[in-house]
Image (cartoon, rainbow, N blue to C red):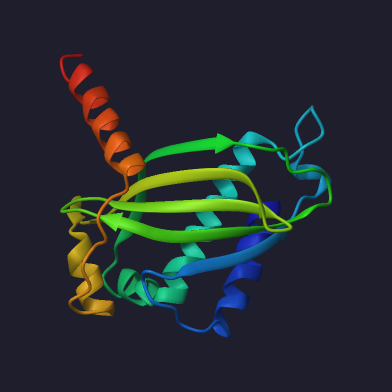
Length: 177
């Protein structure tokens, strides 16, 4: 229930939100409440992924993607996620979630999401995803051309290139099963 309330708050916040470029950083601030904690008394691992969903959703609103997504009846699907926990986020702490689109190819979107407390990095995640329309993948450039025509993807970082290769190897290793 807590995340639905945060989603509703995010929807209201989006009405006054200024539009940003697709290559800009979307920023949200959250507080860690007692129901966000695990048995160790810090932000639970599963909650990071839920906050990341909210961050990417808000990013689509800020960039203007959301209007195209709704207009065309597309829906997002996260295909792969990797996260590194660097420091715990303690109870009642406020943290900033920064979301950036860092790369796209012929099929996938690649996002970077950072969890910062007082400007200090506490977790770093990457998400690969697609948009689906009637069971088929929507090419990233199609959405980008509707919002920022002619925008080209930055080159993938070494981290993203290595991650893509790892994901391809995992897919190949399990293709026979």
